[in-house]
Structure formats: structure tokens, C-alpha cells
Length: 496
Image 1 (tube, rainbow, N blue to C red):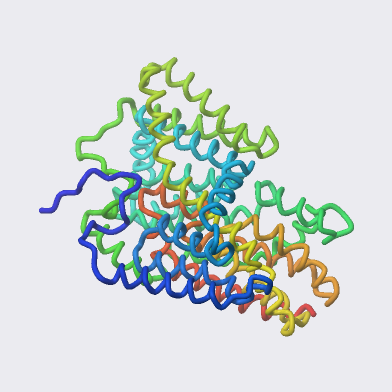
Image 2: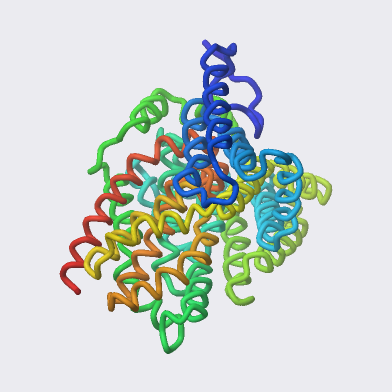
């Protein structure tokens, strides 16, 4: 019988093993490629296809090593060598400092850290386990556990971060009982995060993109009006939701690496090796009655969602209010001491270090890709092939690749919308269809990219590592992307 070592948030995604010559060969190949391209590149010329190299290196290293953070760091360093071969260390320091001072990163650190602490309080008090045992009285089968997870994910539509962390925290102990792998849980959670948020006009995604559309002249009226018209054409969201339903019902078989994960779970090990989570012992019991635990679990969740909506869909203000409410609620009932709850908040903050580090380095990579001109190159390369009928499909395909490569589902569109909108207006293409293609690409990229914020948080909340989640989810995401691309081709020819 094998024993598991104490898991750590920075543990590798594969069991530790001695180094091999393949690692040295990979490093040598990457270094030779970057040096060769740097010597061949005229610093006064555009980078063209070379702008794709750092993102390709990230994908190759990540797949070869199963190490997400290291792959991102290597790709970013290679991009910096291409940009500033004489002073790439100084450039790295400047970009890193700029990223850490970015308002979005600061917001993300606070939100994710506090969310980690908030969820840790729910677990420390025993309320998460009570909720799981209370749900066991209602959920009687493996299929029902998957369907209830998907349903909860749809209900928490206000923000993909909240969805990813809250749904996984609520359901992972329940799905463990029915032999569901943490990888499949992460897939269902992630599939009801960004893909669902784009379909609901009361989400952070809708507010952000509606403002972006209005600012860039995509409509003469309010941006939300155009957003509402585009919802039927946000095909990836609809397709992803349909695939999740088929997976939960057992109508779509396990694909690729998910087969091995599910086989392991059915053998009694739902949590993968090296995952940042631990199984509950057989004697684990909540310290309160199940229904009291359910109420103590749902009340903080309701306050979190309600407060976020009250403050104009501001998750930071919502999680601050929910944390204070939960502290008071649990102290009044003496579910835990003040010191224990504060320790839980700090421990929860620490568990978010890996996802926050991955997202921060992802922002560094995005900045490097911007300086290399990756997005502009992708759009310019497709220019000669654009027609009104092909525009939606090409916009979806090209932007999906860019978002997948950069992990930036929102940042990319600050650059691309000012280019795509005038292009659509010039070609007289249906604007709701083009906006649907843009939002579908953003949703796919956020869903499929193993280092995007929602994917990393879904993995963290579900108790598996980002590469474990990314590799098992990818076949489903690619299937959804193929169906979506075909749909945009058909709609492009039908509506133009």
C-alpha cells in the first residue's frame, strides 16, 4: 500500500522523480531557438510570426513537464530575451514591478486571498462538511452529484471567480463520496464559470464588455443593449453548457486523460497525487447537526452573493462583507474560537499563493506578448481572408487562439475590439453575431487555457493542480470549440 506525502500548494503535478536527459534537451532546444531568432531578428522590424514563439514555448514546456508556473516563467523570459537581449533582466524587473502595481492584479490578490480565507472558515467550522452530509440526504447517486454541481454553478452566475471557488468548495466532499475525480469536478466547475457568466447580463463579464462595446463605438445606444442582442450568438457558452449536461448525465464518455482520472477515482482515490488537498478520514463527522451546518454554510454564501450585487457587482466589497458576517455568525454560535478563525483566514490566503503566482506571471507574459505585437499580427494575418460571411468564424478562431495563448480573457479585448468593430462595420457584418464571436472566444480561452485565472481557481478550489485540470478538460473544450466554429460558419453564411 502506498502512502501519500503531505501535499503542498507548490507540489509538482506528477510524483517526484529523478531528472532525466530530456529536461536538459528541452532547455537546450528552447535556448537555441530563442538565441537563433534573436540573432536573426532586426530590432527595427516587426516581430511578425516570432511574436507567437513565447506562447508556443509555454505550451511545449507545460505539456512536457506538467509544471504550469515554471512554463509561464520560461516563456516570459524567452520573450524578454527577444525584446531586450542586452538587458532582459532589467526589462523583467520593470515589467514585473508594473504588473504588481497594476490595479487589476491588486484587486485579484485581495479578492482571491480573502475568498481563500472565507472558504477556509467554512471548512474549519465544519460547515462545509455539514453541507456535504446534508446534501447526501438529497443526492443519492453519482449522476445526481454531477448534476447538482452543474446546477449550483449555473446559479452562482454573478462572477466566474466566485463560481469557481464557491461551487468547488461546496461540492467536492459530496462528489468524493460518489467516486467522482477531482479533475471531473474541476471540469464541471470551470464549464459553469466563464461560459455561463457571458450568458447572464447581471454578471461582471456583462458589465465589463458592455462598457467596452459602448466605448469603442460598436453601437449608437447603450452597450448593454447590444450585449443583450448578442447573447443568442454567444455559441461557446451554450455549447459548453450542453456538453456539461451530457457529461453529467453520462451521455458523453470520458475523453483522453479524463479516462485515467475517473478510473483512479472509481478505485477509491478521487484526489490525484500531489494535489493541494487532503481526503477526509472515515471518521470525519461535522461538529453540528447537518441542517444547522447547511444553514451556516448557505447564509455566508447568500451574503457574499447579495453584497456583491448590492455594491454594483463588486466581488471585493462582497467578500469583505461576507468575511465579517461569517466571523460574527460563527463566534456567536461558538463554532470556533476567534484565534482559530483568524488562523483559517491566513491559511486560506496562503493556499491561494500558487494560483495568484500563476496569474501574475501570466500577466507578465501578456505584457510581453503585447510588446511583441502578437494580437495585431494575428488580426493582420487574417485580413486578406475576411468576408462578411467568414468574419464571425475567423474572429472566433483567431481570438480564441490569442486568449488561449495569453490566458487574458479580458485584457486581449481592450486591444482587439477597437480593431474588430471597425472591420465589422466596414464589411457590414451583423454586429451582434460578431460580438457573440468575440465573447465566445473570450469564454473559450478562459475555459481552456490551463493558466487562465478561472481555470487556475477552479483547479485550486476542486483540489487538483492546474495541469491536471487543464489536460483532462482540454478534449471537451476543443470539442466545444469545433462545434462553435462550425456554428459561426453556418450563421455567417445564413445572416449575411
